[in-house]
Image (cartoon, rainbow, N blue to C red; front, side, top):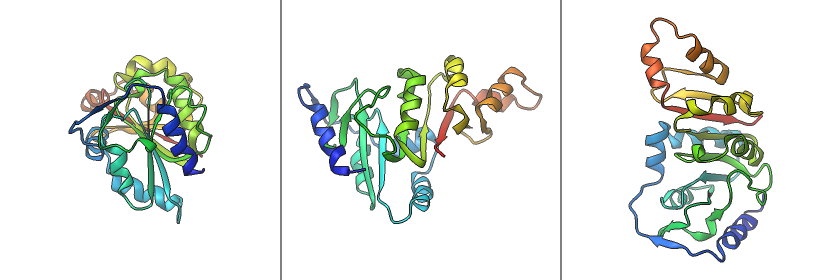
Length: 213
């Protein structure tokens, strides 16, 4: 994937839109780590091992008002892009050539197999999950990885069950007391077992992971 193409796509995607520039102290990477309960240092290390001697191309979905992309781009051997649609409000610290205005449900100008890693917080539940999950799968490189949450995910069980990418997904409770596949999660909900009361409560907040084979 030509990074210059993505940068030109970013600048082109913002043309013609009124953009509000804001000074907001919304932290980026630490916010993602805190809300998704992951170590980004560890995650990046694992992905770099899959793709040795390559610069990682990373995307965050729904992020323009944070400082995430500039923070990612300060890490050696990483090139990061933000993808957002509804909020044409940009933190004044962000570099516009790495911000792509696109509909997460249909990112047609982004070629398939583009990103090594995709991350998102507080975004997916605002989309059509069938479409957005298929798009994440499409633009991930083979052996690429995605981390995201889905607020009130239990309201979207039919969409998750029927989604073609569900076999490549797993879920982790935020304290890591539960880790399993979507069928295992749904079976636990339908047939709760004695001794799992604490896990049941913690299933309200989950991290979803997608690995593209």
